[in-house]
Image (tube, rainbow, N blue to C red; front, side, top):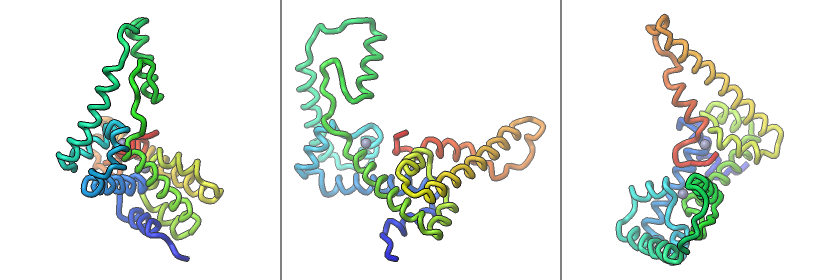
Length: 239
Ligand SMILES: [Zn+2]
Ligand SMILES: [Zn+2]
């Protein structure tokens, strides 16, 4: 049976990378996307309209962008964004504040999280383009992973990997159509959870002064692995 390049990329990541394979490939793909924007598309009118109506990048992609981007292209994009923001600010009505500051703060935070605003500030018309690309990549990699898990050798390679982080496990379990793939994902995660719990118990036990001098075992990085597993990799940013 013919397999896509992504299928083989996943197999390589199962073997070689530590951490969630979907996080790993997605972050690589987002980095390649940002690099291609920087080298090829920064002056493309379609991309410029997209990034300007998104008010630039979200915090984590803005940070990544600043590490790689040309100064001129960034200046042109953010000049247009600043113009748009000023346009909105200048049109804000004055004298419509009511209620206590805490109530207004909660209302502003809730409105911002919901992507709307009740104080006249126009939210960006579009989401951060790198976040949209990240979602496309996650969906593509998860689709190939779920199809791959129908092949026993691929399933065995997955079970020998660092497995999915919790955010991607949730997505994969929601997307899994076949009982068999659902069970492979769930059972492997439960086994890994039990192993991590036991390793954390060992970390806790060795913090007792009576066992302090015992040599460090496989649990040496269990705390970091547990935190990373529950949160997903930095730059994935969703729950
Ligand atoms: Zn992940
Ligand atoms: Zn983003």
